Picture 1 (spheres, rainbow, N blue to C red):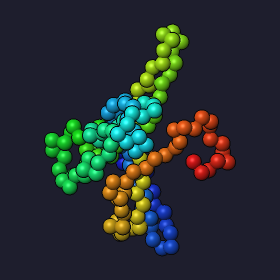
Picture 2 (cartoon, one colour; picture 1 turned 135 degrees about the vertical axis):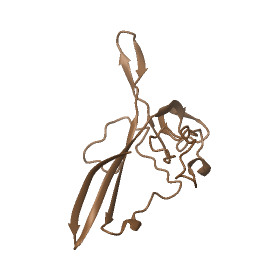
Picture 3 (tube, rainbow, N blue to C red; picture 1 turned 90 degrees about the vertical axis):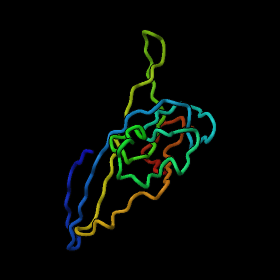
Picture 4 (tube, helix red, strand yellow; picture 1 turned 45 degrees about the horizontal axis):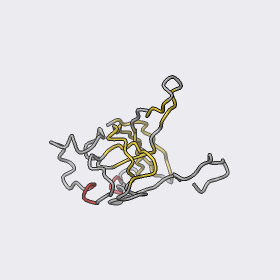
Length: 155
């Protein structure tokens, strides 16, 4: 676990502590699965998947729950995250490059580094909340064929 940039800001007489930390998450698999966009079906493109080792064609709440998260013994194979209690799954479209010599596309090796920013008032750490259980987010548009323009903010 890597801690970065500790910042103190004064606001209305209270100091706001901001902590930023990052974790590396290794590649689990490259696959044509997307359990949020195409649950139970083959995806239209390849994804590079990182994190929870139970990644599959459909997401289930039990895959992301660990009531004994403080106990990391014998859990080294549950995630590719360097922070073992992190059972999150991350996946992105895979990146390929064209090789003129071989006249083939080649998959680019990759990894993920997730960043978390935590802010709280001095002496009020108990007001820092985790993500809601079983939070799922979709970002971007897999069908888009053009680059986003600077004025297009509703992405």
